Length: 160
Image (cartoon, rainbow, N blue to C red; front, side, top):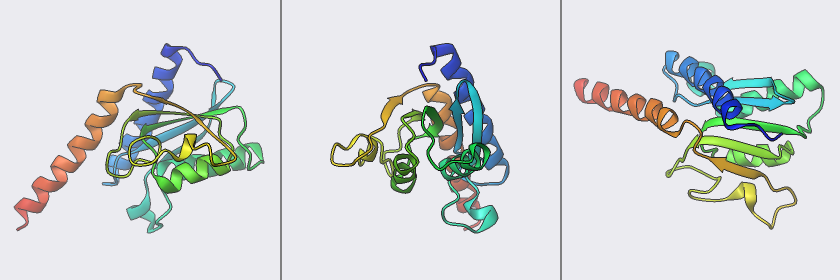
């Protein structure tokens, strides 16, 4: 579960590929991979608009795929790599899945629940705490989000 900096970069690049898939669907570009023993066992990207399902955040999709792949709801000895800080829903799911470590690229000051607005993952009142690491490919992870919202605002202005 301890990965070198270079390995973390490779896995975050994979999460960014997932974010690019969301972007191609005009979804908020967040991507995620779940890794066990150096292998990706779950992938996900935002698909709420595409599939009309409120819970289809990148983390939820990756958790679902990993559960199916290993045949267990407990995702022990895994690391979740996600481009943007998890929200309240995803942080709750991460804890319930018993994922021990989350690495995210950039903070989410408006919705983040892993350090920004809340700190669900490391809350000592809960029975499962998650180690959190921040900042792997931070500029790239923040940049894809900033570009997405900038483009969306420009389109909205043009349609006024």
